[in-house]
Image (tube, rainbow, N blue to C red; front, side, top):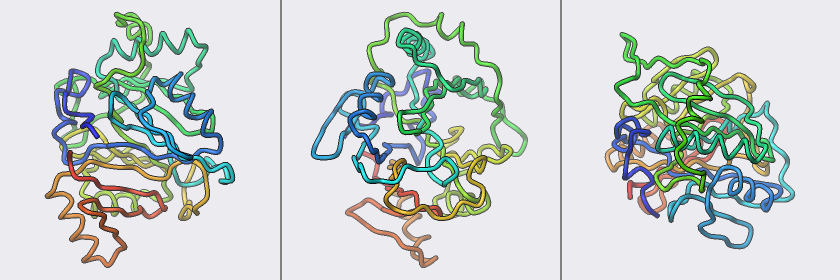
Length: 295
């Protein structure tokens, strides 16, 4: 599997993400209708098929897997009030690429569910056929980010300059560019304090931004590789198996980070499965996490 962040561009915040101790490798979803969901991620989002076997389709860019879809026709549809996935955020290399995708979406009659200028990034939102949230975004260059005295980054929801982004497109959309990656994953959780204890205290993420009802968690100075919110899921219990939606998030991690997590879980008496050099665990709401050594 290739490293999706080995060639940072201006859309990667001047290489901040590529050097971070944690980077999102891929996301694994469960789907009732595998064919329909896979077709959506190819035709609308622009991912390419990489491999397929009985009941599983893997999609990505080049030879790099960004999304795995597993069929379970009998799975209970995930409820938006449960813990789980808020969105998978696909990071494009440049603003021109985002403009190209918007032109493609317009031509295909795809109506995004939202859009925002977050100051650190410019983003468009939509959902797949089974309700899984998706973000397509581009980062602003790191030197343009604004910082508070406490070290947190300024993030807001402002009006997106859609016309300017579309105008930046300089070639027809031909699928997601090879330098694209999953920039971050945003989760629905049941409690923000528990989220901070787990992802901050145990995994070692920094709280990069506190927002009403949400935490944005970053590594290596990036605005966030993970986020959690309680906007729809306050007080949600642990997810049960056998539902559609999020199954697992895979994160690339360096050796020092992996050893630190291994030690913290062992000292806390928390369940942790070691698969070669990979650590397999679950967050407090049952979301699967796979910490994979950097390629």
